[in-house]
Length: 199
Figure 1: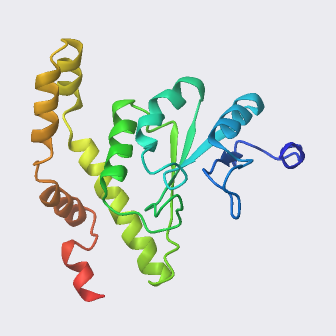
Figure 2 (figure 1 turned 90 degrees about the vertical axis):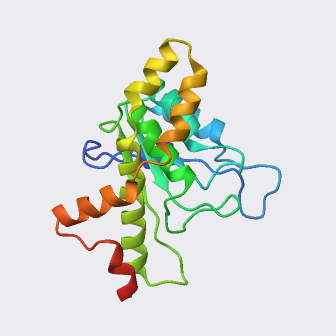
């Protein structure tokens, strides 16, 4: 990796990134590109960490890591995918994980620091549709995060009122996100919810 990074080019045009993985093909007990190695490597080489939400243990969430990573890195790259058992490369959906990632970026006010890359590999569907479905799903997750009245959550947290914070989090889940997304599509001359029926 040091040899690759030694090749000179304008690193403001393409940010070098390294992403970790929880396992290696054919390796049950040792992975060179572990999360710990890659995190330390990027910090000692002053490059961008890349987190793939399919490359962690199923009980680990990338959304939980974003705020800590931003404390020590100027920027962060995310590979947003639909994980399948420690693997990725699947079309992103409006899952709890995807929404939580977008919420954490919003809560950290880090839209200018986080770079999003999407996966659209699913071999069972065509690539154009895969790309469109993934992009629309991430936009929906982002919109759900933007609809969240984060200021009210932060106010409850500052006051130490964790009961109100939890109650608000639960109530926010019922906000009419679908109606807002349809209006967004209408205003931007994009296909609305009926586009999928035409496939």
